[in-house]
Length: 121
Image (spheres, rainbow, N blue to C red):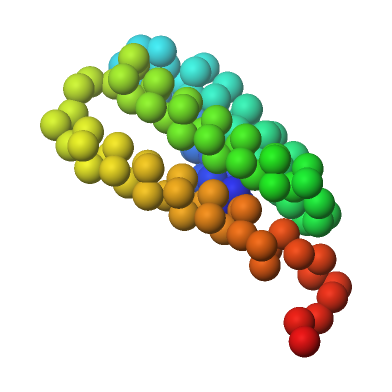
């Protein structure tokens, strides 16, 4: 999930820079600078979390949990404060809760926490 969000934000960053003039003309506030900065922040944060995940240990689980929960909080803040109201918020809230619960169950699962170099009997 971390890698997918990181890739998505890298694409957002590239698209915002490539289409800067178009976004400046047609995008509502706050415009292309906000899109670029937020995409760069989440891309760099995701890359750092991904590097931590590649090394087993407590920091990896913490990095993944912080990245995913931080991204969900930012997404909801962006949705509530900057976007026009949408009637599908109950579905979006349910999807957010389900995805965060799925991610937490995978991150903190005993089999995921176990040392990957040891084999099961």
